Image (cartoon, each protein chain N blue to C red):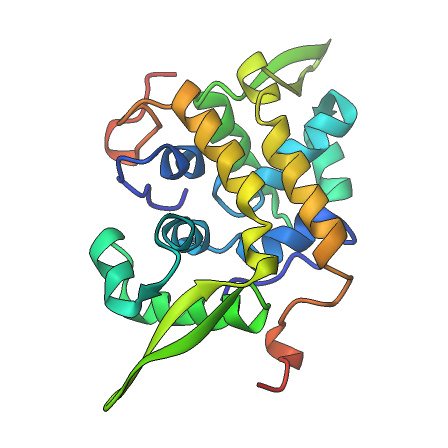
Length: 118
Length: 118
């Protein structure tokens, strides 16, 4: 997990919980699908490694944003879902979606391989 | 700059622009103060190194979220401010502030040095 900001600021406090790379996209999938198995995240988030996924889920669970339940007992398998605290992150994701739809086109952001001429 | 997500998703597109560590807190300062000099950010964001600050400002400027103007000519010095596109990020930050005020207390998130007992 990335270092915490250690700032007395509610925005920094929120970022301490959901600001790590991939965390918000993991939450996005939980808003879309209500419950997800580990391999479901892997299918929709190419580029996310199992170890980072595992670390993010554990961290989000530790902060009370995500919870797990068993969906199969032999062998035991978990699925992940949003807690009420996690569902209250919805306005943040909706605001990001809205801004992205208005301002970002696919391939529109700066990429190291093809940076804009500035 | 961190690797881009390369996903066809407006949330991922937004995160490609503002998702890097410190970016949202830099924007927070620009919402609070309207214009900021380089050293102003350093004063309010302890832990942010000059090289990361410089990289973030350049990236945010390249994506049209932040712009600069000269506030002193001898020697030339820049101050940073939000573009209209940048100001439209406001609802994202407000939603983060609101969630943090409700759900995060100082020192409440998991930290490696004092992880919760789980």
